Image (tube, rainbow, N blue to C red; front, side):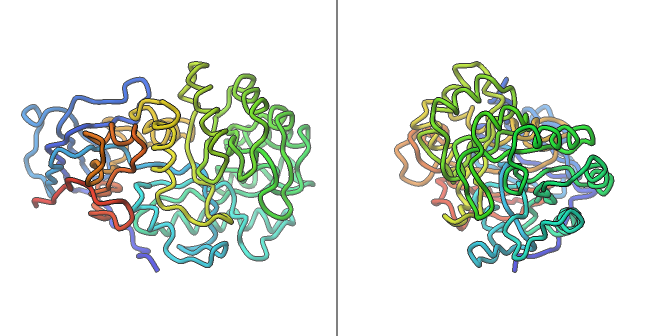
Length: 397
């Protein structure tokens, strides 16, 4: 089992110097011309050129060795249960394994794989509150899991959503995985959730688990959830024409997942670029699922969208970081003063044809991770899952 303790950097000062590329996560300005970042506690305190910054009294100094620093990746669509275990694949330590794939934050789309998941209203509310509390207290490998996403069922009333919000629940599980499947009914509950500050995601496409069903473009548009969940299907996608209509007629988030239709993923991403709304695109894995657990799923989606989708690699990094952070209201995902110090330090994989990390992504190669930092604390060094990086950072002090 992964370590449950979560060390923090309270009162500490971290300096990361000799940064090669710095990818900001901000789609309006994706590359920063800096070589040094100063972290105080768990937040970015300063960034710029080493000669211009105060590096004194650093508790930890990291030599990035000219590797690429980017925000930690955010997986917008996971299905946790309890602890670092998934009954879906009877697998332990899957969340810690995602850390080694560059992920520092995960967002639950519902704890649907819990054996015997309660579907009565009292039970589903209790499960959501319990999951939210449990993952708030337990961070495998340091990864932040934003959980407690109830799957809504028929018979829920406005007071139920207020109760959930008052208890700290901020997410809805995928609309459509429970008994609420009609557009008008979903719209009413989504509106109640939004009223009390709970963000919603809707299942899109064919059924994924027993009890779910087809959610077509008309239901998605009428429900008007905040996120069009796995717009490329989870696993079965809607026809491409319907997906295009969703991108064009809705202004909500366009979530593209690893466990979906790759052809439709490319079509949705390209259309978002054509519509000049790339800020709407976010990435998830939709795992654990029947196809397994994919620790490198977000990296693989980045490589797919850049290499076959023709999207600049620095833009796809934003899909996996800043776009999600802004849409989800997180204080991470961006390299900026005051943001959480959640970083992935990567380099091109050894023997890739790419001349640097960005070029290798555009060729479809997954980069190598040399170090992961969450809340200003080094959580792992060379990844056990990615191909070996050409260069890796080192901790000097």
